[in-house]
Length: 564
Image (cartoon, rainbow, N blue to C red):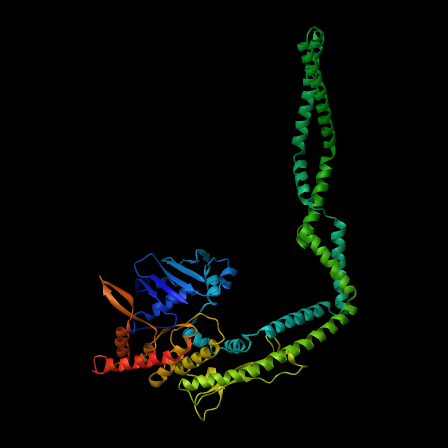
């Protein structure tokens, strides 16, 4: 459930905190007082889009924070969010430039991530949700939720078989006819030969680049080597100088250990200098073919880069080669493989048809049960003469079903309704009014709510187009729903207000030249006064508060008899 919400600098709200009941919470107030702001705040907490126009005028930032308490921690843990005992805090800060910062228990999240998380805990039903009921795709989701909520294994089986079937069809199509296979094999063999003949080695391109860099500097290198060799072994070279020094020390090396040591060091230096000079000479002699080698290296690089543009870098090229060999092998036995795949396809197609038919049978049986329950709820909601059916298209036969089948089966159906006696059943999207739609949505939630683990349900416009006795029926249904789920509801009806376990009065006032919206939790006396105001008789009839008290007493007695 949503334990508490804190709102700061949102629209007309400067700052407020609201603590909620775990059952039926009702918001009421004069038109324009700011009830929609509360709904906007709740929408932000569940991943709704932030519009910078929501920020209170004259401020730079604001935030909405919600404290939630739910038993199921799995969705939180799957997103790496730490929580204790299922309690978590959603904080959404928003700024003048339109940016916002979202955190759940301190972990930063995107709007999409927040929406994905909160769909496990909170449902909001407003005008957009009523409109979504007009979509056949949404109607199908409702039926499948009702039928398969407790056991979705038939749906999983269907998805697996459908994926297998599509994969087999793709493999069969990829084989092509005999002519297409021969053409493809020719192309593959050419590519295999081109890559194999090139014999590109791992790291070869970089090694060639390094070598080319050296070869392109060959003239500079040759000059440096020549100068070095001349200094080491030419006229007045370092080697000759060391030889002169060594001869000088040779005459006195026997006169003392220090002279002998110096002579030995000079001799070692002479040997090292001669060796270096030989190495430099070898390097210099090897430079004669550098121009030819540069041409060879450049040509090899061009070859590798041409292959790279076709098949990718070394690792990708090797994968392409392996895949090409495998495909060529596969296509070379295309006729045999085609026959094998066709046998598999026929087997999977038969299993897919059986699975689709099973799903259809389960849906049709489940839809009958759902129809009965929805009609019963509609009757309680003042639509006793309604007829409701889930109308299915004719089930396709085995020979034609692949043109209709999807990962969810081959059923095509939609909701049909006749709200009045003597009217024919027609598609829901063509005939339902605003008041009927809100009641119809509530009926669906009452029926599917028994199956739902959703902790909190928020109704924005559930009382659209209804009044009087029907309003009391809706209030009773909301109370029933709130015994299994926390319900938050914005209302204009005294009947729904009287059924509240927690009632919050929203009002707008002028403070220091600014307009602010405030929310006041009502005690029983305050509830009575608000019920009287909503009934339209407060200040007009002396019995207004008495009637409101009687309505509140009636609703409290009704709730005391509910289980939950």
